[in-house]
Image 1 (spheres, helix red, strand yellow):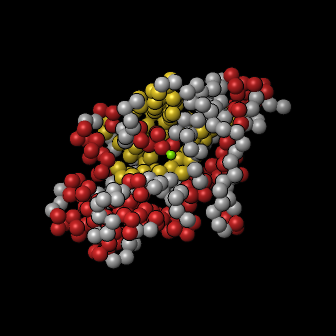
Image 2 (cartoon, protein in one colour):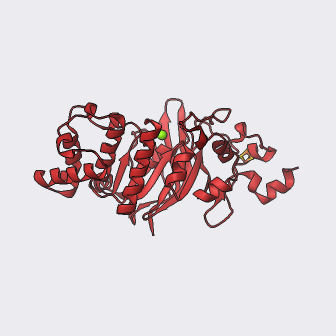
Image 3 (cartoon, helix red, strand yellow):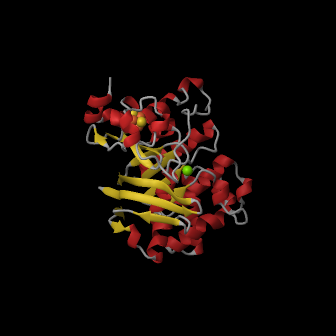
Length: 329
Ligand code: SF4
Ligand code: MG
């Protein structure tokens, strides 16, 4: 059963220099109870695509889609009231830096209770009870006394737990986690991922996990999409993408993964070169300038997606039967 369905989503930002084509025609879906990862470098369109779905972008953004439905509802046609419901109630979001999402001037209790009171229409007493319950769910010790504290009194890991508590407090159908562990050290990162896995098991919430770290999705998601230059260049089950990756960019991502045996989280070794300028995206494959396998056709035409199985798709000329015959030696 599909919870989120997106077809041909395009998001452009109008700036002085022209139009930045941040998301360039992506299609995907998330099933009920499923965890899907979106992987790619910064600027590849991961966050923008999710923010587009939530219609949480600045005014200079233009969002177009042939289809954008959440739980059977047309998101593009929702009015203000429906969008509000969608945000706090149906979809919860967790961002990389909880310090910027939490208000330093209000206690944690106030910040957890506010959405609960609005969306679940509970009294102050009931909201307090619910707040304590969700803080317990995210394993914050002595939640009763923590309610009265301010964000700066929490550690980074604890703040991220509070953000998760807020995000799940209204029992969302979908949780969007945008680099939820990037700012945390490796031990805390593992704890937060464990916690999310646990919550998912208990509540059957769908999760979209946005990350630049392939290791993080491997442990969390059953399916994943690799984004590059505003497009999905490869998608498949986690197993397919890890054990049988077919796109040169995915190869690069996997090569640059820190080895588990190295213990500590190391910075990823970046793939040489820089991402395409989305003010004037290349005519052909967006990865061509950095690809060691680039052929003539790659700079002339954008590679169409090729299906390798029911779930595995890749957009690369190497995989295209025609191009491969002509150009591969
Ligand atoms: Fe490389 Fe060509 Fe495939 Fe693009 S289409 S990833 S340039 S081989
Ligand atoms: Mg981002």
